[in-house]
Image 1 (cartoon, rainbow over the protein chains, first blue to last red):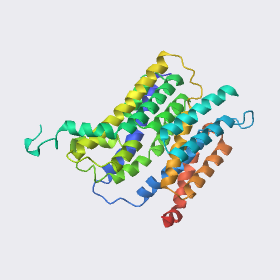
Image 2: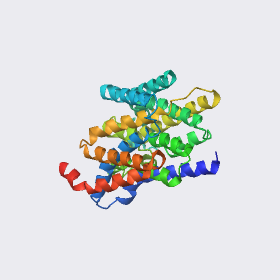
Image 3: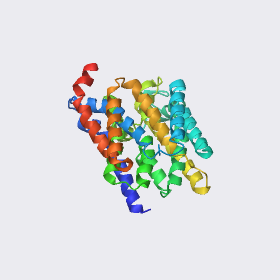
Image 4: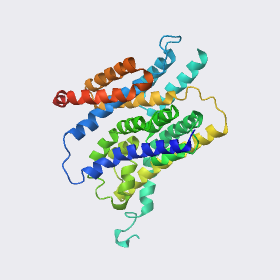
Amino acid sequence: MDSLRILASIAVMVAATAATRALPFLVFRDRKVPGFVPFLAGYGPPAILTILTLYCFKDVDWTAAPHGAPELAAAALTAVLHLWRRNTLLSIVGGTALYMVLIRMV
Amino acid sequence: MESTDRGGAAGAPRAALRAALPATFPVFLGYTTIGAAFGLLLASSGLPLWAAPAMSLFVYAGAAQFMGVGIIASGAGLAELAAATFLLNLRHMVYGLSFLELYSRAGARKPYLVFTLTDETYALLSTVSVPPGVDPDRFRFWVSALNQSYWVLGTLAGTLAGGLAAFDTRGLEFSLTALFTVLLIEQTRKVRSPLPYLASGACAAAAYLALGPSRMLLPAIGAAGVLLFALRKRLEARG
């Protein structure tokens, strides 16, 4: 893959990430924070996380066997583990391990 | 460097590091493991191996890095990558806004503290109290620096393992789905109203059906943004 394109991609990610972290400090150093900023910062994350979680399932073929069963089962295990123990590491490792096993079985 | 009148361990640089080490131990376990998974995933994605430590050093945002590997490897455009990264990391703004005061006197360490404010570092710094006799700014610096070093360490280990041996990593990419599932559940503890989840979920479904899997992301995000601001009064009335 073209190194320059990867370098540009990483640079874009650095800029976009640093912007989210630095903007509050740069913009609101001694100015009142306008109301839409906490609104966006508060309600943006649930919206984008919903979209990105669904986006992870975009390439699942629901019409052919196994109809997304490994994905749904592994996501369900991740959610159950997380609701039960609230240990991020356990939830991710558990769900991913189940997925890796399931796709080798079906 | 150190003024003697501060006495004892109070101002000693090592005291802050010694206090930060045990405080960051849970993050050590999490970051080395998930960092290693990220390194393995990148090594198996076809991207050059140097991209893994480069991302962990300079992007330093776990979910965005996992997502970035997928987006870059799929050949999607830079605009899509920028928008998805920015919006995914929008939650960092909440952390920044709540630390405006705390970091205002951090001096030369402030840029690094701001740059390394990840989910876990924020969670730790906003809950752990600075041990007595330890300089708070030094303590926060060491917590931030140790956390990033764990992330880079895990990344290097995973990248090396993935580059050296041919693991059967099929299915490892599900770690991104699992990570987002976890972040989404964590989010529901903070924002309890179902409206933003349902509204954005509907936008994602509509974009998927109308435009197909490869072109759904940006339109879904855009539509959800418009819908969110249209619902702003109702959301803020709920508190």
